[in-house]
Length: 358
Image (tube, one colour):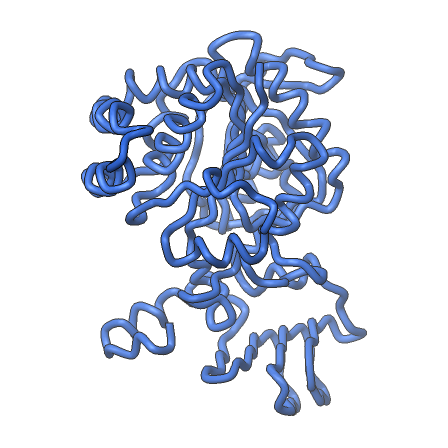
């Protein structure tokens, strides 16, 4: 059984605007440390899997960025999505290509833009997940044990059905639930059997292909047509033509919410999806007033703020709970409670035809 990995790297990281931009999205930025998030993802995975068995799904805009940041990644391991169609078509295309290269393989599917502090613990969990995946037609997801009532994540509810694999407790999944309001999130935290949905999955390639056939027949039929094109002279063109016909659907909705043999492994390995600017409070050092300060900043009587300068001096006085991010051509100022809604600004920019700021 060959262990492979698919890294999903086509997103634009819009909630991290204005630093994350169309031409240089979040996964290619140095958010924490001196390497980009996708470089850190690759280094982490190479503790378990050789680079030849790691595949990255992205779009044409970022192919050259990938080659520059991950020069040792084989060119054929870059899978191009002609258009964004959510995670189900992305994973379906990757499974088809991996199946053509490794007929007997297990896939790890992981986003490109997560922080994981305990890499050893993470790798151990992946080994456990792969073992469970190889024991049957099982779909495994990693559930992050919640430490506060987060409203920006989806949740996974486990049942009381428990087993132990590699001395790790694994639970049967009861259901996936959407992002809750604060009151509901607090009830999930109190219940003790709800986990943050990490978006990290492990399964045998043939098993996810089988589930796609059963639960997403439209996607399966398109993939089967693509299959005959693989290796041919016009494979890229044919795949591009067919991919745009895929439904825009997540793997959670298309498969995970409907399949039977789904298991969750509760995890605590210092995970953060860096979904918005407020994530910096969790992963960066705070000053004595609870601020995250980066760059040329002068602050007086400033509390619990996130401030990042692109070089010019940012001076603050008497403010609280604000996000201020200055880039070469845009300055963002918003309250922390609106951090999840930054995408509304991008929508407005498109409406006003100000695409140069995207």
